[in-house]
Length: 279
View 1 (tube, one colour):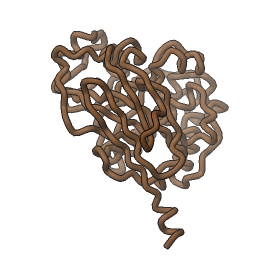
View 2 (spheres, one colour):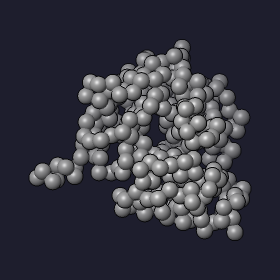
View 3 (cartoon, helix red, strand yellow):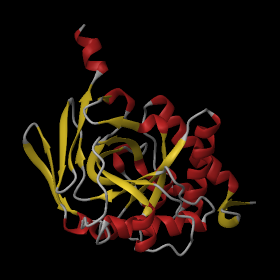
View 4 (cartoon, helix red, strand yellow):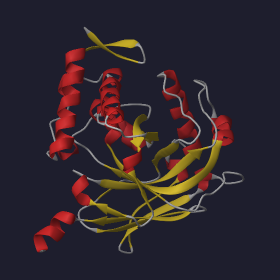
């Protein structure tokens, strides 16, 4: 028996897909990172997306609300690391969203890292499997500066392409700025980015680092999810991919991302475990 995604069978047995999902689910529930799942899935990306779909269905059944998607592996250097030539994607849920400066408890994550991104909020559907950048520009209501908290259920971030796809594209949380910006006349590709911690710059980049432009990345996503039967809809939030290298979160503190033309957003990490021990 084979697994399936988008109605198409994949070569990995359904038992392997279920076992991979259970391994990742247990890691998330216990807070103990697990072994990679590529021993079960190989390099089969369709099988990895089938695992991701099981996790999405479980979260929806538990009452969580799907609010959008995230794009990963947008930088050529990272793609080379994983031996792939295209990005991947994951699902965003309502309980993953925080606002600028809203405290984020480190206890909810396993191995968090942060990266600065541009968040797109759609005002129209992007349901066409041949969507292009003009469609994205037309459908985007506004953009926001964002910090993605990436996290892995895989021990030591020992991941390859199947591991990260199955693990919902290594998603953790998103922090959104609160001042919207129209894309009218705004060249996202030319926008510079800097990310600092306690005033020290820890990552730099630009919109061009994200598949040439975050708009291009969103067009790729629209085509990919439409082909898999889950098109982007009005109201969706889209994290378009990193503008620079990710940075490990090693303790409480405030990361600030500055993106030219978009402003600033801050991810404020606290640690209830340390506070409890001190008490």
